[in-house]
Length: 394
Image (cartoon, rainbow, N blue to C red):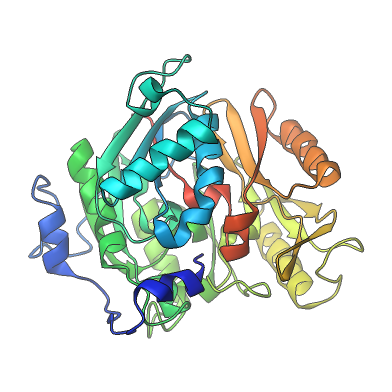
């Protein structure tokens, strides 16, 4: 999910150690939080049957982002457009690492997002929604992955704090992640929301929920030895049932070409309602070839999802675009569903962008659909969904 060339620039020594957790750092970030401390067992969530993860299309309280820092500064125009879009429909929380990052964010929001100084400063937008700024240390601009995993337990919204180690070290040993790893606890302290630790390294971008009984994830991510050495599929299925209250667990496998996350599920398969799942598909017009490596991953995923009783809808890539030194499929799977809207990556390709907008409008009737050009961050590994972390209402 990261532009590794820019990250290594700020940490050339490569001396950061990857370790499963940092209890002292968690305790420091949780001074106002009573649910998680360095002496508490990591798997310490409440018992009970009324446990679930709300679907993304359910009502939300806000959407959270971590503003890109200087090595990811090229994402700022897209971030400004994303924030301005969200503010039409719901509140936004933004984490900044320091005063310089905040100033840079404010400039981008005014210039590219078209927001007024008052709204940027925290006044409500014309629709009545606010930006709330948080001085919370963070290392990257991909809050989907290191941020909170939100659950509802017996009617109460809670945060789960799964481990984060910078994608299993896939982008290099020098990538910092200790601040990112502490973000869920810090968010819990800000909101006074209970935080439950989970002693498994995993990213939220590899979890797709239908809001009731189903979750889809990729074994190639959670089973990666750089994240969870020695973990088994049985361990994973048991953890999904325990921590999310689901009964149907679909574990696909395989990383598409160039995907260093291990194949996050939000680029492969997405729920559009409780029973229907959209699965990516190569086509004659796409960069990936029918019958090739990526196509086999998508086909296998579709078969496994259907075997669990879900209805599978295939979405062929309609074309390909060249950006810098890379050719991408026009892959719109990385969509974010919010209150009354859907936003996804745009490829500055009017024909495929328009077709994707029409398709998403059909799948999410009654929601306004936005196509937001995010080629800079797509080049580094992700889009709108990867950058955002949606907080359910309640």
